[in-house]
Amino acid sequence: MLNISDNRIDRESIVARFSSFEKIREIRVFRQIVIFLSVSFVIGFAALFLPWTQNIRARGTLTSLNPEDREQTIHSMITGRVEKWYVREGQLVKAGDTIVFISEVKAEYLDPELVGRSKSQTIAKEGAQRAYQQKAQALSDQIEALKRARILKLEQARNYLIQAELKVVSDSIELETANINLDIAQKQFARQQTLYDQGLKSLTELEQRKQKLQESVNKQISASNKLMASKAEYTNADIALANLENEFAEKIAKAESDLMSARSSGFEAEGEVSKLRIQQENYTRRAGFYYITAPQDGFVTRALAMGIGETVKEGEPVFTFVPSDYDVAVEIFIDPIDLPLIHQGSRVQLQFDGWPALVFSGWPGLSVGTFTGEVLTFDRVADPNGKFRVLILPDPNTPPWPDVLRLGTGVYGIAMLKDVPVWYELWRNLNGFPPEFYYDMNPAQQTKDTKPKK
Figure 1 (cartoon, rainbow, N blue to C red):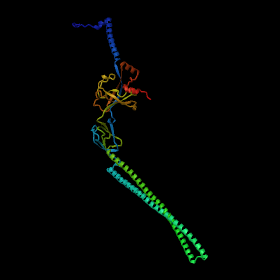
Figure 2: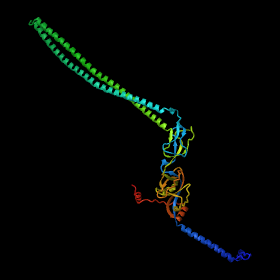
Figure 3: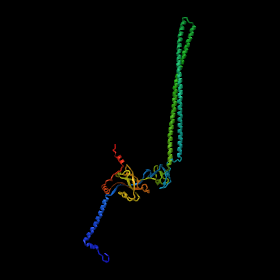
Figure 4: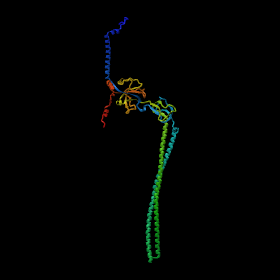
């Protein structure tokens, strides 16, 4: 005991002689094991009743809320050759700054005065259009003048026709008078002849009556000829009126035909002017595509067409661009079975790649280095991989997300669901049951959703 003597006592050999000491040692070791197991069982059993937050775990990436704030690939609008780069990769540029200059390679656009000559063609064609318009206006005025002249000429011809008609009537009356006078003269001559034959009248009186008869015949013939001339004049006046109408109709029709031709040529010139204006505008716009500029403030991340003299095709990417100011968001991809458990406003714990964190998925309050987000929306259609995209925004009531995060950073998301005991979660996982489905709605929303549909 006091180590006074050099002789040592081998206790193990002494204890080995007696079985009682061995039994006592075994009982002590077994008692410690029992106590340890009992305490462990009690602690484990008590832990089964601790609250456990059900969750959905998914991977995703950091993105921006607005589509225009995400990484963009800037394409060339025309086919050309790279002549000069004005920036370097990773350089900050402002909206409208020139990034690269591209020269023309197509033969139909190589003329350096292409825009000016196109403008000259447009001006010349506009002059032709104005000339056709003026010609059409002159022909229109000519048609109006012909119409006014036709009215006057036709009125004059109708007056001539009326005069001829009245003359025919007058000559007809004169002929009728001559016929009556002739008939009277013939009767008087016949009576005078009878009286002369009876010896009651002299030869002189008979000759006088015969002279008057001859005068009546002459007057009747003259009146008849005059009537025939009047009728011929009336016919000529009628024919002249018809000819005048036909003549003016022909002149007006010809003028209207020329007017339609002038207007048609004017419309064709107008169409050519429109085409030339479009062509001129296209040339002007194409000249503006030689300089590819920054669409907004941001960074030129990578040049895709790097060499001077390298040819790029129309629609081919030239460089990638990332805006400098954007609203961050997270997109995660979940399985279809978990989609009914996600709704707008659900809370999600996020762990960012490269950011130190200690995560307890079942006890989010104990997690360190994670950040909270809220579900903004989710896709109604699955992606080609069969998963649904969920868009998450920062929770304004929790600490903000780190400013050093960049677009494309990997994210591990844990969507928080219902709080259940640990034993229930173990039983659910052993049986392969899905998490508890719940949806917290305000009373107004519940009333609205529970109304029967008509």
